[in-house]
Length: 221
Image (cartoon, rainbow, N blue to C red; front, top):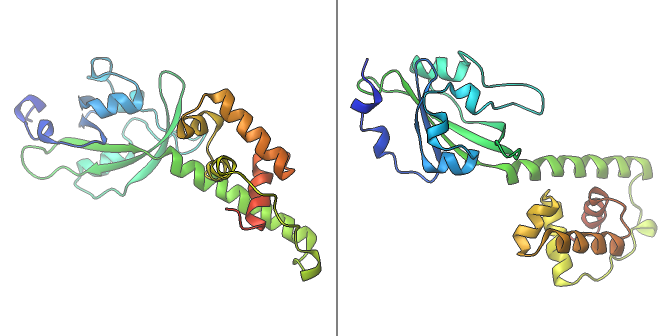
């Protein structure tokens, strides 16, 4: 079998996505700069190691996906198409990230016996989906408890929000944490936390989820 040194194909891959290549033994033989940025590990620390030891992806908070002879690599090496999938990964710094992986199935010829993985950070999307599910569930429970809203018992008009408060509300509705809100607004985390607190007080909400439900009922988000 050819070695990766004999296969310039992998070095020709130009992508902003994270990329790594494993051989048939699941050893990492290529690791690009984007992979280092997203997962926080340099190539010098991962080359030659097993992919499941480095990526250690999980399907959820507890269920491990990455392992020896995982179905993804096995099927890819057999030339079978593999659908893209999301995994929850943790960087050496302790940051949890949802990553979406795409697999390039080896073609017959020089690349046979290697599997190319492309991945990108989809943490924002996953947080939005999870938060939206929670908000929808909370709203459904509230409507079930109160019955359908009659004309005479429609919620009172929402208070007027400033432009900054509207921005913070939209970011909360997207499932962003305080640190993410601070980055999105270009302010310090303590400032973002103060914005969130003032918004909750203005809406009369005791939690972010309650604020989103309140805003949803009044068409603010």
